[in-house]
Length: 239
Ligand code: FPP
Image 1 (cartoon, rainbow, N blue to C red):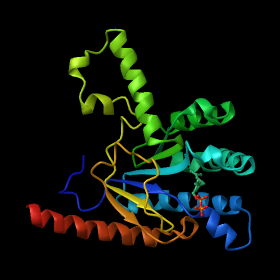
Image 2: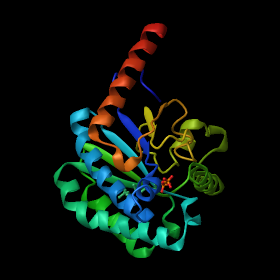
Image 3: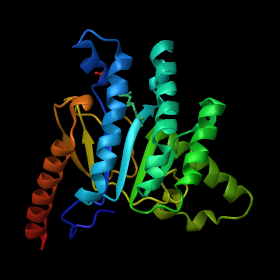
């Protein structure tokens, strides 16, 4: 839950929207926008330690994104694999602990193996915690958590009378993460699109017009400053 005494957000979650429009505006295929978007992920992760962001969670592929064309879906999957190949070493060496959330069941085996390997490779890091949501949907996550919780009740491991919000949260993909303090969505859309539904109950939201491939560490820093001002004002009212 949000700590109102923290001026800067500990955990920032980002809905990286606008890659397709960015590419189309340049007469390029949508995948070109996703490639550029991948570079912005790298820039923003690198900026996190300096900006005091300890946890960064990015929405890379939703449970609804399978409805896109086969070309775009497989292009995105290839992009995730390339990102893992290209970035593993620098993520490890720069103290980034990487986790993936979402349902892995529908993902290609090779990609899942690479995700597992990167998680293991960076498990001891603690400078920045990067969480990448792939085949992730908030409702799907709660449904999967409920399934696991129900199994534990059925096997007698869990007493149904003891189940509260914290119990359910401990079954979510994000069980090791604090809730996001701030959720940013780029590209002018003001929707949460099934992202971290449970976890963002107390989050601040920032919707900005910038398309994700145009997002820079400077824009990120500006949003964090605004957040700090909002927080201070809120503290004064309640304090
Ligand atoms: C939404 O823009 C973006 C996505 C569905 C994909 C996000 C993926 C990346 C930024 C690629 C790299 C990620 C990692 C972690 C390497 P959109 O395609 O819906 O844009 P549009 O609304 O303009 O069509």
